[in-house]
Image 1 (tube, rainbow, N blue to C red):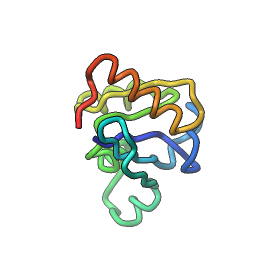
Image 2: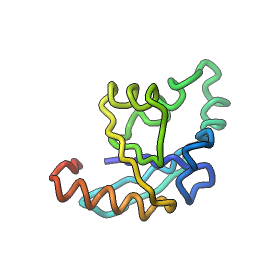
Image 3: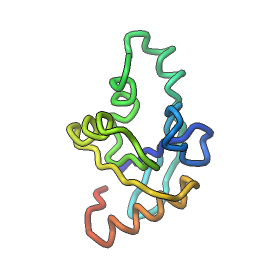
Length: 114
């Protein structure tokens, strides 16, 4: 399963007050991180001139089952949930720490899907 983390620098989770510039995408299998990539909204826009608004984020996250955030607006939250994406809110600033907390919670509640 792929898990997206809102990040503007590719290491930490962005502040809820800042605009999201991109996402760290973790490929998780059996609670282990198998791969990491960074997807920038700007790179996506350059490749896909027709993408606008939250459809940009929707396309960037089309293969992700969970988005980790430190906070987001209700419209974006509703759109993600409508598209079957779970949202995990954290106070962690470091992406991998937040990912591990999310995995731990999912394993404890048996919601982690491969």
